[in-house]
Image (cartoon, rainbow, N blue to C red):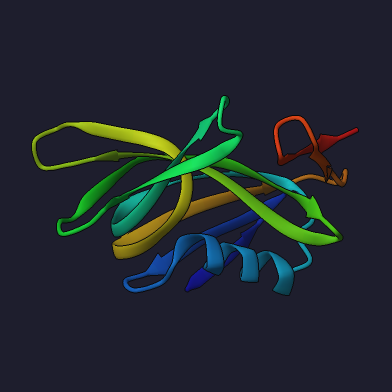
Length: 140
């Protein structure tokens, strides 16, 4: 990982073989980033995308692997769960047939590069567990 500090955030370049969520979570911990927004593009393989099934009250994962996928869009935010950074991302992938797949990002390994912009916030956003949906929502 390489990065550059800019006005209210960072530009980050994740390298081949790095896992996106783990890398960004560790970066946030190391740099005391407690809330903000994330956007990015790049290339990946070995991806788990999750879809939240409202009736089951759980995320249903689907794996994508065996080819290079374009990260058409990577968007999300940073907040706190139990005073630790929580990176919440959604991803849109494109394949060699120009099909796209998207959803909640479970995990993804960079296979070319991944260019990320983090815009930090002065306010801290905490997440609180919601019993009805069984996930952590922003808590204002």
